[in-house]
Image (cartoon, rainbow, N blue to C red; front, side, top):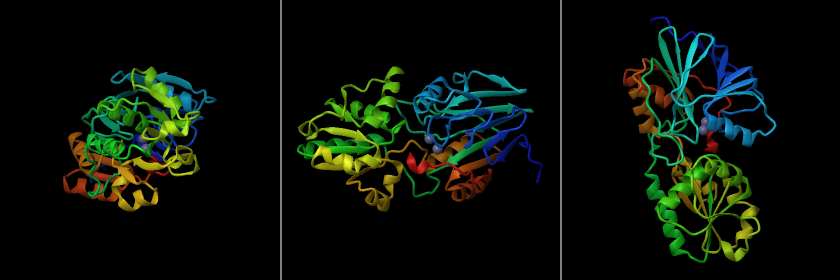
Length: 335
Ligand SMILES: [Zn+2]
Ligand SMILES: [Zn+2]
């Protein structure tokens, strides 16, 4: 076997490390210098000395970590940044607002670190752009052939049909606060639903941030302070935990829905108490993972987290050298 050309990129306890630039990508512990792919908590952590990210990711981190004050460097998609003789640029990952793949060019080779990504259209995130790579670093959250995400519009139709069918019930949709909440609002509005939508307090700040970035979600109201009667026949969004716990009781007779890629697993939907499971994910499904890895034409693929072995096996069969990294500290169950 030839010597690995990517010895300038290595796995350390803090995460993926680019030695010549002395920086980490999505480190799980505080470091001097980091590139952050997107604002989810398992990738964007507080306490770093300097952070390179999109302006949107910086804005999300500022909302989530108001006391964090790294030296912030913002890069637009496609704009190169030189650090320690290494050329970096960010490409859209289609995952959430501001999400980026990190493109690293050094020694005549190009590595692309995807962070989390999806290929489905999402009105609230810039679409994923495939970048030709020598080394592609991918996630594998849904890296098993059983994971095939349906069209999100089809799932939203189920929710709207239920609202019509059960006009006396309070529909409560469990969504994660960054990305899923705003994507669902956009999809629901695009499907023609224009009644007021109520939001749990934990979802308001990030939804406001999306609004400030030009995303209009129509008539959105805080759930706090609304009367029980207001929720009847209406739609309320809350974090998945709140959707099935005591908080939900204030809404009256609740029909609980959850929007998550994991809702395709029947046992998990039941365990989470989702009467109406909607399979909507901000991650690539099996087909999209395979297609994306092949599209990059990378000679070598590293798989950071998720179901790494099945994907590594399928890629190897397709002629790509694949290496599971088994990166600790990623918690994509929460997405
Ligand atoms: Zn994520
Ligand atoms: Zn993640």
